[in-house]
Length: 119
Image 1 (spheres, rainbow, N blue to C red):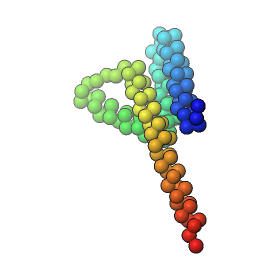
Image 2 (image 1 turned 120 degrees about the vertical axis):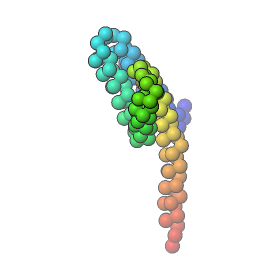
Image 3 (image 1 turned 30 degrees about the horizontal axis):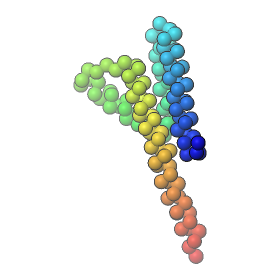
Image 4 (image 1 turned 135 degrees about the vertical axis):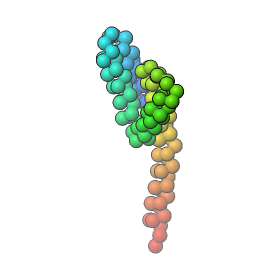
């Protein structure tokens, strides 16, 4: 396994652990407050781990849901919203660390090399 695939592997392991914790917490209790707290914990951890791009993308998702909800009267179950947050966080995580970060790093290295080589 290469060093490049390590963050994706860690992300998948984190998702597996979080989903298993969520499922155990939700199916273990009949208390709606505890179920909500389990979903809240899951979403909060994903937003924190995918910071900053994932946090911004999840904020956009939440704003879009609150704009669309009164118009279409769509009530999302907690599990569907959790799946949407998982998808948005995963895409943001990948894009942030495998697309944007290498581009920014290369630009910084080019900029640094240009400054060092000027007389």
